[in-house]
Image (cartoon, rainbow, N blue to C red; front, side, top):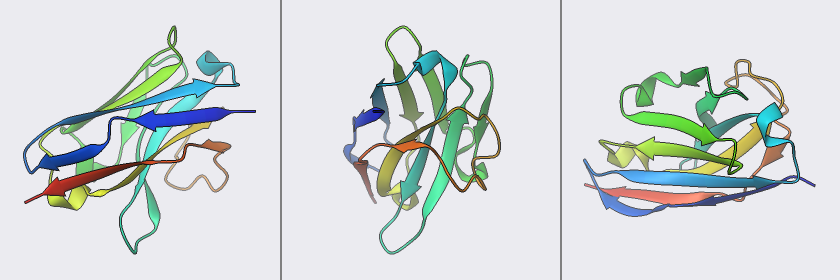
Length: 124
């Protein structure tokens, strides 16, 4: 059974940084694309970033380009999301996800595995 555990969320002032981590187990990590979604209060869960199984390819939602960086360490079965220049609009619960497919996660309806989420709150 796939298990994804996020950590690193918290409260930060606008302009600050946070680094989220997601530790994965129960899967062949190096065979899965990994990504992040977020859900703000009262809104749908939306795609943020995805990284290919090898780490060689990444894709981001436009709103985080240049501010967020997704990376992975296949030796540690962990994916990261470095978030810089945070804005109040980035406030959300951030979810880690895993799926064998590196494709357009903005429209992929059936991501195979999800974490429980970690809260990120950016104050103005």
